[in-house]
Length: 93
Image (cartoon, rainbow, N blue to C red; front, side, top):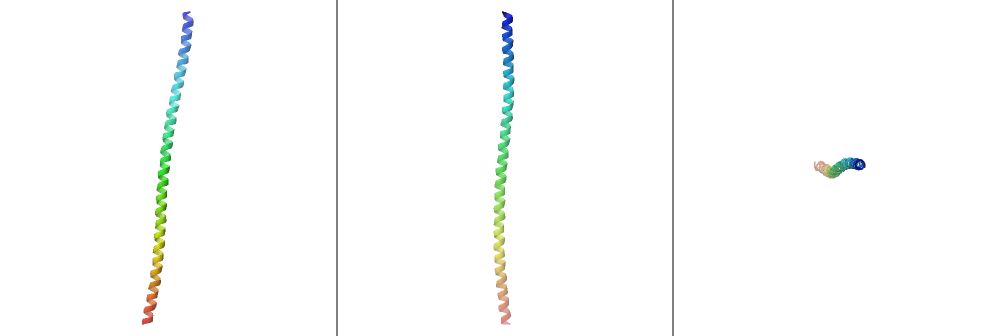
């Protein structure tokens, strides 16, 4: 009878050890997944930050193009005015 009880006890010890090993493996996988998720969130945040930076740079570039266009218009206007003044000066001479 004691031998049978010892066999049963050994069986449940092995089963318990197997369950504990499985639990440990699951916890390791869980920790790995948590770290992967955290890394993914960090990378997503970096992407969002880069997109914001790109948008700011694109706006600055567009603003500089507008300023250059305005300056070119002003330069052309001043050149026409200068030509008109030269012609008027030449007529007075």
